[in-house]
Each structure stands twice: as C-alpha cells, then as structure tokens.
Image (cartoon, rainbow, N blue to C red; front, side):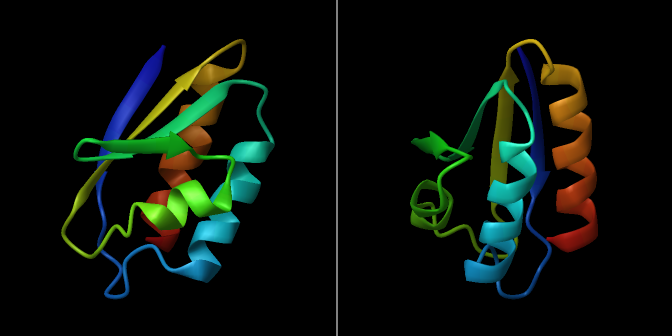
Length: 85
C-alpha cells in the first residue's frame, strides 16, 4: 500500500470539473484508490465520493493506492494534483 498527503491549493477546492478529471485519472489503474479528508473517505474512482468530501483550499487530503500498479497510480495522481489542484 502506498499513500501520500496533499494540501489543496486551488482557490475553489475540489469542485466538479477537477473532481471528474481526478476520477478519470484514477480509473486508469487497477489498484484500489481511496481519497480521505479528516475522518471521511471514499473511493477515488467515484465522482460522488470525491465531491462528497468537499475539500476546500488549504485542507489536506490523503490518497491511498493498493494493488498491482499502486506505485504508478500514486505518482500519476500526485502529479495530477500538483498540476490541477
């Protein structure tokens, strides 16, 4: 299992457009990918789970990947977040 933490820098937080883009990135991998904020977590491959966290600017999220391609998944998602959120 691999994980990393990221602090949202986008002024609008994770809203519909970037949430959809994040889900598409996560869907590329066979690993189970979870997104967590505080005590709430969800499947990062499901748009309602991602948007349901209502992550705002300055809040920390944790991405966890577990599976055959977990290392590649973590690196790809980390790069996506840095470039987009």
